[in-house]
Image (tube, rainbow, N blue to C red; front, side, top):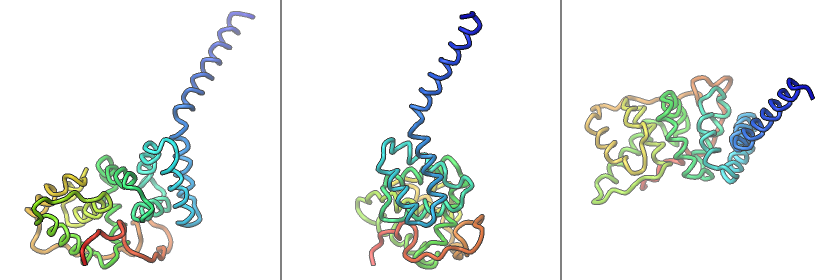
Length: 226
């Protein structure tokens, strides 16, 4: 075999080995990207829910959840709607809600998008929903030893902080640091909270008629006492 041909074959073999190695280590991410596509292309929420549930229970779960969160707000409103509904449903794990919430800290444009969706999907009129959440947080804060809140509730509070003009407090909000953040929110609370109307569509860039959804708001509505 001629020397140049031997070198060419060796380079092709090395390239093949490199590609195979990359595919092996990237297989979970590639699989989760494919599922993200399938979620966005799903014919309805039930089909999308099954795809997300399969991802939550499959191999490489943590990487898959990060990929789902990274895909939210990236240009597919239908995917965004399906994932937001899933995150707010009883099917969602707290791990997915945590991953979804923390993504707001990396991409600041996501928090207004979430707050818009939250207002659209609220169980009652947004102003009343916000007042109910604040009353619940006041009750928790008055306890001798305030307890952590769930990630489902963190997502509610993040929307409230955004909608009431203090979005910086929503970044990397978590179950353990909500007390300090809420006290800071109270220190700067305006005498009159801004009116928050219910948007006509789930997202500002939604095309076509708004979907008709039954049920309660995102997060299943925070667990407040009756």
